[in-house]
Amino acid sequence: MWGAVRVLRARMTVSHLRPWRVGRARKPLGRTRKHGSAPFPFLPGQCSLHPMQRWPLTLTVLMTFVLGACSSDDVPPPPLPGSSASVGRGAQLAGGLAACGFCHSLQGKPGAPLSGGRTMSDMFGEVVGPNITVSPAGIGTWSESDVRTLMRANKRPDETYLYSWFHKGNEWMSDADLTALIAFLRSLPPVENVVERRDISWIERNTTGFFTAAAEVKGYVPQISSRFRLQYGEYLTNSVAGCDRCHATPGGTFGSSEYLAGGAEIVFDGETKIAPNITQSKGAGIGNWSEGDLTRYLRTGVTPAGREVDKRFCPVEFYQRATPEEIDSVVAYLRSVPVVEEPQS
Ligand code: HEC
Ligand code: HEC
Image 1: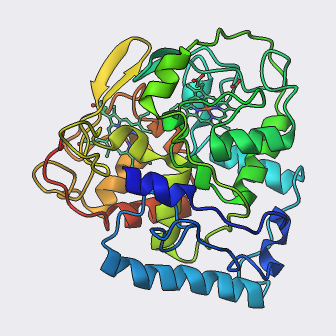
Image 2: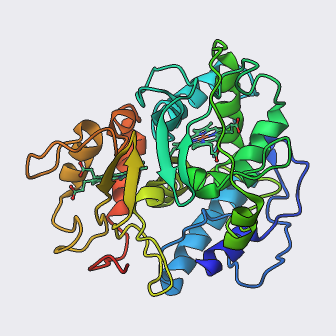
Image 3: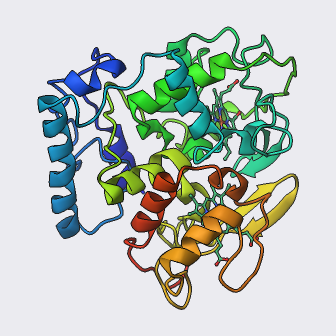
């Protein structure tokens, strides 16, 4: 876990490239490494591959940027912020794989207003999903860069930090996707709904160390081309959907956190479910599921055994709205994830 945090803390130095200049950007590779442990700082945080598998992947991703820098047809420049194409992409993400409304609407459903009200829990206790519409009760007074900082560093404009679990992975969302999300949030009607904020004591914040361990991603995060199915799938799984928020085995004093191996207690609206192991383990995970099974699950919430998943806990009603290309990429990536036989907790 600390390794991962260190990777996430690696900073990039190119801070002034405008997100809409991706196609023509010449300098995303000109960064420095602050911490030697990061082989490739802008791969989405939870890179689960064995180091030997990582290099070909890294090379392919590198090629994406190199090609992107040479020819602007390869990775099309993202739409300008606020344009309808950008709002459309933001809506697709928020109502699809990023599932913002799962936690930020009272109903936890796509299409419901993002005015907050749903209760959930983390290691600090109960918390209510805040209002993220542009009203005074929501984020109406926040600038675009305030929202960006929240998503990149879990830091609010008043300099307080949020516990990073809820948005785990989102700090590595590409600039283009983040810009689109913000444009979408700003296009929504304001809703007046005051949500009470929880208060975590100074001692609690500072003894756990979690608030200060929040990743701080600075600078430019490029878009991964959807033509690279596996890498795009990795990006969507880890930095957009954040499946690992719920499906990771919680680390503790005696065990390490295991990627997608399940075992965490997920609490919504006062009820608890254990997130299952979704690695390729045949016994403990979903190693027996075919690609078609996994696709069907993400489209319908029904497992190959015919069991309907509890949609209040796994955001499949959002995943249903992802594009076929997004689903294919996530499925391809999940099938490549290393086996973990048992939750390690
Ligand atoms: C798994 C649940 C979950 C998901 C999914 C989620 N959030 Fe959040 N978000 C929260 C919680 C909980 C908080 C408040 C945490 C706290 O107060 O400690 C929060 C806080 C925020 C805040 C800060 C609001 C404030 O007033 O402090 C913003 C902005 C935000 N989220 C935007 C988003 C966006 C945009 C998405 C989709 C990309 C998203 N969130 C997805 C649970 C979630
Ligand atoms: C907010 C927490 C949360 C997130 C985010 C989440 N899941 Fe789930 N998921 C759960 C819970 C809890 C269950 C168990 C629900 C039940 O038993 O009815 C579950 C069940 C599943 C199952 C069924 C496994 C089985 O053996 O029955 C699969 C597959 C799955 N999730 C895949 C995913 C994928 C892929 C993602 C990301 C694209 C994801 N989940 C994101 C909480 C989550």
